[in-house]
Length: 116
Image (cartoon, rainbow, N blue to C red; front, side, top):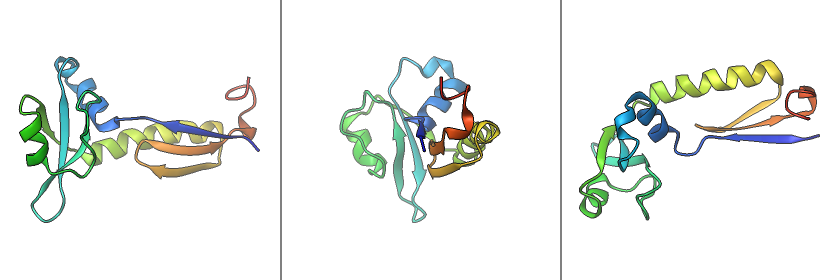
């Protein structure tokens, strides 16, 4: 059995840049509310070294005050990724969701499409 992995790194940031191309040359932070009113980093541009998911937005902005800050729209990210997964399911029925932006799939049933 062959297993493949589809991984879209920094998917929230990439989707926001796709929606707003003028952000492509900027450092972007996408944040969410942790449920307790605290704003935390959901994702960020790769140029923001040392910033990790879950960090306090205030802490990150003290280090990178020039960053463009966007509120997350997780519902849109999920809908986008579900569309990708549905296309993958047309090729192979064995798909295992790992996290938003990452799935594993069996490639044996995808001869000629995924297996050259």
